[in-house]
Length: 206
Ligand code: ZN
Image (cartoon, rainbow, N blue to C red; front, top):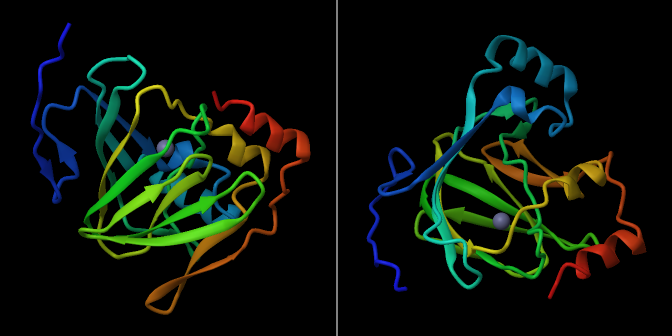
């Protein structure tokens, strides 16, 4: 049976998409363990734990393999210590599924890491499209002083594995504030994946 075609209006101001059936948000208190400066996190979370750090609006037309999931993300500007607000980040549960992100408003960085621990950073601003190839762990970071709004699109059978980052003590690099800009620095808590852990990622690819 044919699915009805649809058109969706994206608002760069609010970070929302019309006709989105799903929505979720992450509050600061949901993001414990992401940031290097634990005491700065606790201090901010004790008074502002309910602060919404990011929100996702999405549409999943069908669950069928070959279909798409698309929507928008909105992320508040801010920092924990010198580290910018970021998403939890993930690899796709079927790790060979790709994704695109398109900058709608604000300024940010897409931080990417291969299973072997290679790192890439790509700046995303209004009208920049970032391609996340298969097999790359990805996380977005708001490096600006305004909300970061992006639209995204990925295959409906991708799934998300959030644990891959936690199991390695975070991503290999952190994005910190330096002057008016940002810098990627090594994450001291990072533990490179073992050969078995890397093999497990590749084993998800069908
Ligand atoms: Zn993704």
